[in-house]
Image 1 (cartoon, rainbow, N blue to C red):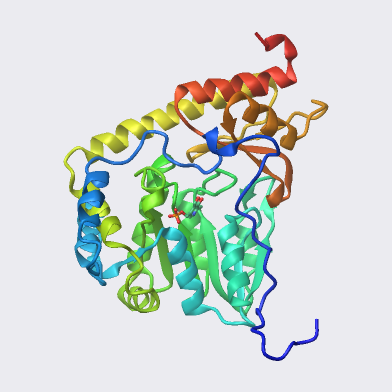
Image 2 (image 1 turned 180 degrees about the horizontal axis):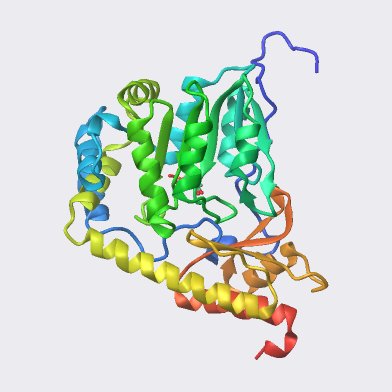
Amino acid sequence: MPRQPGKPQPRMAGGTITVVRRLDGIDVSRLVNLSLNENAWGTVPGAVGAAADAATHAALYADTRAWTLREAIGTFYGVDPACVVPGNGSEEILDIVGRVYARPGDEILAPALSFAQFRIVAWRLGVDYVESPTAGELDADIEALIAAVTPRTRVVYLANPGNPTGRGIDSATLLRLADALPGNVVLVLDCAYAEFGDPGAAATALRLAQERTNVLTTRTFSKAWGMAGLRLGWGVAMPEMADALNAMRGIGNVSGPTQAAGIAGLRHPDTPAWLARTGAAVIRGRDLLTGSLRQAGYAVPDSQTNFVMARVPGGAGVTAAGLVRRVAEAGALIRACDDYGLDDWLRISIGQDGPMRIVAHTLAAVIDPSRQT
Ligand SMILES: Cc1ncc(COP(=O)(O)O)c(C=O)c1O
């Protein structure tokens, strides 16, 4: 398109990113939302009240260093607060690290079927996004990831466990990756679902981030902690990287109510028990859904997250989009994965028992109508 003098010209075409999903004729807002991997058990103790109290000071700026929050994170997780980078969701930290280390002409690398945000970061920066092949249908292939590094690679993203795959990499493989990457390539270990997966792998990511100058790990309050709407995430890196990331973030990136909610949740004496209880409920629901969908004929890989992937059986005579609609008609919103190129797959967040039964029953009944009551 010829440039039109006098008008701002976007560097990239809009419309590439679709977040809102619609189902014609169905009021999606009335459905139980099992498409965003939110916490169906609510929010950690103390957080909501603290956010409401802090909102009474809305006329004042919050602590721009978010220092008390960083100390509370440091105390809870055993990390130096100077190494903590607070974010408006962990999404923001994933973006900041790209902005600090990558420029047009560079490459950002991630395994195929990675969290869509990694590609979006590259797109926003005008940086080439390179994907390494998976091992089998869904799993990240770490040797292929290492082999895909070039002199132009600046940042490697790995979500562990992954979204949309739900699959995890163990500690030994994480170490192999960290050891194999050149020191000038930043390794970002996105552990948004750490609480539902292998605790050893999450601990290894946290340790690597405190020991290696080129490793960042990110965590979120959106999933296990039930604070998705308040937007709070955090990263850990050694001081030089943490300082660079903190300098890049907006000084008011985490609002006062959100800082207060995080501090209250981290300090509340009931939080560890709440996290254990709700985490166990997620895992129980995940096991039940996995079992009943497998019995109905769906392929359901073991998940390390608060969602499962289910492959529609061949010859079922119904598409993933058709199944999303059938489940919506029954009262719940699940997700097709066509935007990831996984046309036959569904992604279903783990919720309370009632909605889970609706999903399991509806998906089974479509495959085997004799199951319908
Ligand atoms: C793998 C992964 N990383 C990061 C995020 C971002 O979460 P938030 O910005 O809410 O912390 C998500 C959200 O779904 C995710 O799935």
